[in-house]
Image (cartoon, rainbow, N blue to C red; front, side, top):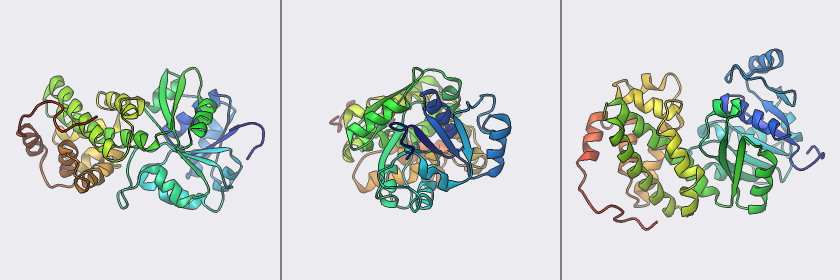
Amino acid sequence: MSGEGPFDMIGIVGAGAYGAALALAAARAGRRVLLWARDAAAVDAIARTRQAPRLPGIALPGAVRATVDLAALAGCDALLITVPTQSLREVCRALAPLLPAGVPVISAAKGIERGSGLFTTQIIAQELPAAQPAILSGPSFAADIGKGLPTAVTLAATEASLAQALAEALSSPAFRIYHSADPRGVEIGGAAKNVLAIAAGIAIGLGYGESARAALVARGFAELRRFGQAHGAQGETLMGLSGLGDVVLSCASAQSRNFAFGLALGQGRSVTDAAGGALAEGAFTAQILAQMAQAGGVDMPIADAVAGIIDGRIGVRDAVTGLLARPLRAEGEGETM
C-alpha cells in the first residue's frame, strides 16, 4: 500500500471505456491512479496521447499512469476491476499471488458467472480470500463519466464502514457515490437490468412502441424484485440507483450495449450479427439468471424469453407472442415487496 493516505493509490484493472472513465473519476477525486491494460499498444497510446483508445477525445490527467505490469498493482490501496463478469475469475487468479492481505477489491462488472451462478463479490471472495470484496454499480455510461457529466452510483460491501470509506475516497462533485451494506442487492440490480435492457431493445426493434416498452420494463422490474427477494436483497437497494436507476438508463438508450443488442435482435438480425463480435454482458447473464430463477421457483417469464431467444430455443416474435398471451391477473399478485 502507498501509505500516503487512505486509498491514495487506486488500481484500475482493465483499460476499456469504463475502466478509463473510472480512472478519470478517481483522479478527479484526488487519487493517484494506476491503470492496467493487457494490451501493450494501449499503454503506449495512453503514454503518447494521454487518451485511452476506448475513450477517445477525453484527456487523462497526469495522476493517471498506465501499465502492462500486473504486479505493479500490488502497491495500490484499493483495486477496481472493470473486466466482464465471465473474465473476472481469471483476472482474480492472476492477482492472487500479488496482492497483500486486506486490500479492497471492487468489481464494476454487472453479471452472474455462467458456470457457477456466483455473483462478482462471491468470485472475488473465492479467488482472493484475503481481500475485501465490494461492488460498484449504478446508472452510468463511460462517456458521461469521462466528460465529467453528473453521475451517481452505489458502492456496496458487507462491512458498511468500508463501503463508506471507499465511496468517500472516490467521490467528486460530478461523480457521486452512495454507499451500501447490501452488495447482493447491488449485484442483482446490475445483472438483471442488463437482461431487461435486451428485452426493451427487442420491443423497440419490433416496432411495438414506447407504451409496450414501458409495460415490459415495469413487469421486468417486478421480476427483478422477486429474484432479489429470493436471494436476500434489500428492497430499498433494488429501488435505488443500482436497481431501478440502472433499469431506467439501460432500457431507454442505445448507448447501452444490451439495449442495442436487443434492438438489433428485434430488427431481425441473428444473435451473432447483433453481437457485433462481442456479446453484451446481459446475453451471458440471461441464461444463468433464468436457470437460477427456475431452480428457486421465481417467476421470471421475461428473463426466460430473452434466454430462449439467445440460445435459439425460440424466435423473437414467438417469444413476444408468448409473453402477450400470459393470463391476466391482478397487478402485484404474487409479489410481497
